[in-house]
Image 1 (tube, rainbow, N blue to C red):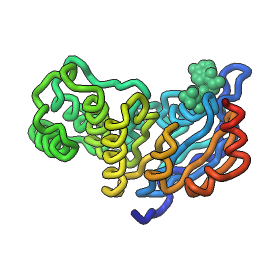
Image 2 (image 1 turned 60 degrees about the vertical axis):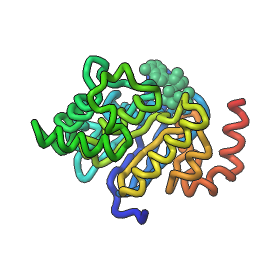
Image 3 (image 1 turned 45 degrees about the horizontal axis):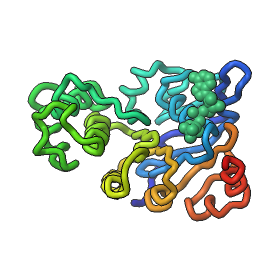
Image 4 (image 1 turned 135 degrees about the horizontal axis):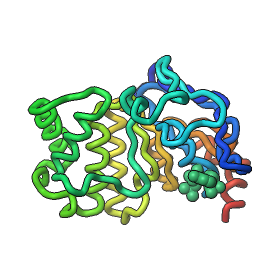
Length: 243
Ligand SMILES: Nc1ncnc2c1ncn2[C@@H]1O[C@H](COP(=O)(O)OP(=O)(O)OP(=O)(O)O)[C@@H](O)[C@H]1O
């Protein structure tokens, strides 16, 4: 998929937790239709960076802008309405609701809001596409782990976000599920969605990302095509240090 114009800009963003600088002067752009990876050793600040983009945490300084809207000054619900959707490291689905109700919730409360039957038809089509059509009336609790993960993506995509944040979405999958999960992310890419993913699975980074940013101790140490950054000496040193 060819990428387009700049969707999101992160400029000199810093996040401190007391004396700890979790994100240190980060600057990068995300292009429309791009799958961008954020990688780095444990504790390097990747999840915190995602939390700053989604507004789950306020920035200490710096600016995050999406299409002229200053996300870094907006509350999380406003950022969601502007078109940032996310999944979490641990699956968070609405367990009291059925599969289709979960996806409808995403459609009703998302970026491009749909109501009633329009939300239902849209959710049905999405579930069909994502391979959960046959399960649509089941309670979420009856789904397997990989299907709950699929559902989480369906719910996020149902709001037609401008950008989808996947935070270690592939974590905890067995090898068969991992392939299913990677195929699903690849299909999002083929649909032209803009995705930012935090991932430890390097095969996924190599096969799914157009570009990635590497963090170490809160700072950006490399940026570029996956093969390029994964053979960078400083990146290799950062990962070896983590061992
Ligand atoms: N809410 C918080 N309060 C205090 N410190 C925090 C908080 N969240 C994260 N940190 C610290 O900030 C640093 C970066 O953490 P973060 O979770 O962003 O790293 P990460 O790269 O996502 O790590 P991992 O790959 O292990 O998930 C760590 O030192 C972490 O302990």
